[in-house]
Length: 193
Image (cartoon, rainbow, N blue to C red; front, side, top):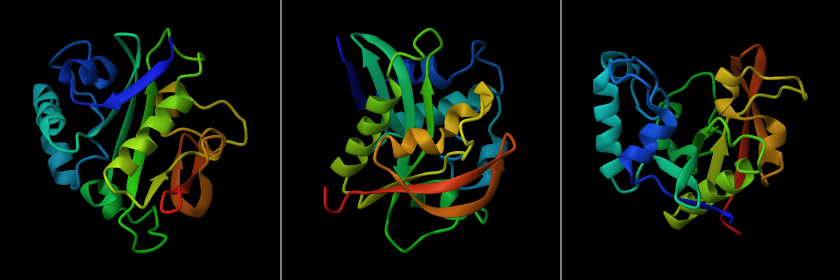
């Protein structure tokens, strides 16, 4: 059976992908970039982070997409209009132009399912989701690791090669560094596709 990518409208499946093992744990929930202000991000702790994600999942559009292998959730991608994310005001990541682009900031595959070709359909599904909601382009901010190993806890941003393989092209350098690697801005234009 192939991988199917759907809008992230199931809170339980989002929690499986980005939630903590313990409800009181203070983990990202993929909110660090999705929220527009660091003040809100820092004010949410423990269960409040999950509750904020529960609210976002109910919105139209939801905060990302989920990949399924049959009925099992196996992947997550955070994708939303850049204006609704911290990238709208991020000084380290430039704006290439004034397009109302969407940002794709997190790509995650569940342990036990990695290395099975899920990333490509997950990115494609995120792009299709953005296109279906009128996005003129999708940007991502992966590391340019030159093929070197990236620590799994920092791999959520993806690599330049991963996004180039999904039809993105490098649009700009950034002043951001993650895990010792420079991050670059890549873009996939949707206006002609």
